[in-house]
Length: 306
Image (cartoon, rainbow, N blue to C red; front, side, top):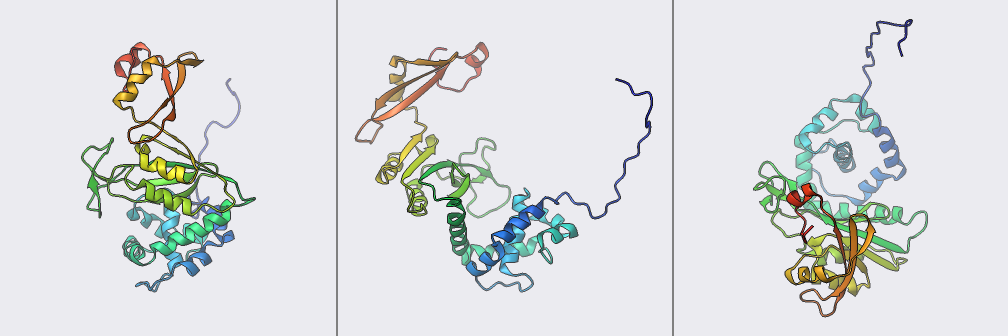
């Protein structure tokens, strides 16, 4: 539809010198005030800093804000240091430069990391039990690959599907599925296998479960398919869904199963099977789908005909 009358030439200009794309951080600042985060950090994380210009809570907030804003490197925080509106919104009197932040991180890793963990866990338990204490936890366990560029400590070459041959970290993380709260995690070198040390990490997750919880559910991918992990879960009477590794004996069972169609092109079956090293059989659920002509030639799934 054409408008015969109206403005033909519109000039758009911005004259607000104090506008900022970080305006939404004010809501985050108010949330931190309600916790109150600065006081909790000041009481829980104490050690002798080398820089007396900033307090420990101010330094921690100076690291937290850019993380929430998606700033992945300390060098990029220099933009925040020059943004007066950002400092006004966050309540920070000044913003430390990247060099100061790096020095603080080195001292924090040695003298304050354990204290920061305890503050996090204490706040998590207070928030997680509101409005009422839940009686069930659902843990989603996963690992990821963080590709590194430079000479970071413990950056080693391991499994890296995107950047083959690049040094990386291989962190292990656990989230509570109902609230999506970060429950526990550990930063590991890039050459560490997914399941390495998982039983110990599970024990750390279980140690934080509040007393009212009666049910434990765990979901994980094939990297956690290990008898030690299963034994640790069963010791706490936990239920689990773990993606199974397609070993050769297990593959031989798949063609003989009775499949039920869930929807066109997708079928499921189940069976009991004792994995290697386990004393009893477990329930396995198998899903298969029909492949198109393109998928038949390109798919990386385990094929049984089509």
